[in-house]
Image (tube, rainbow, N blue to C red):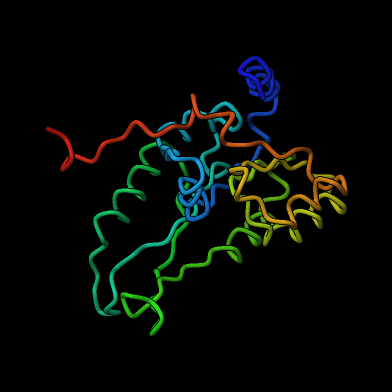
Length: 206
């Protein structure tokens, strides 16, 4: 999309802002940097999202794991996890989180793999809040939510747009677009000038 096309797309939501649900799977969004060579900023994401969904905070939903470290007894969030969750809240997202699990993995250098799948929570919220929105904007190229999106489209006429990086779009998402289940797939690369992270953690500043 060109900047002019993006402007028109954003403006098309001016009369839909109170009936649009935004779902941010930040664990997925975070991985986009591997192909983008830049990182999506939470502040920048929040500023863009407010063009789509306004006033009702519960319709701007941010899903990310709470990392307390390997020990289940630990009650202190890791610095990075705390920073992400706090910045999401500061930028007016409704934050949905659960504890990150550390699973033993002898093939991993660290000896474990981190896991925190919030797909079930996202799918349930999509269905639970269906009376409160007409349009969904999903920031995740993962295809796991397409079954729920298909159900909501076919049974309740919900429209859905998916944001993703070009190399992080699942086959299920592409198929959903071909089948008319998705309104469109939007690429983060086109939105770099609006999404690129400008945040520098305090301990990096001089």
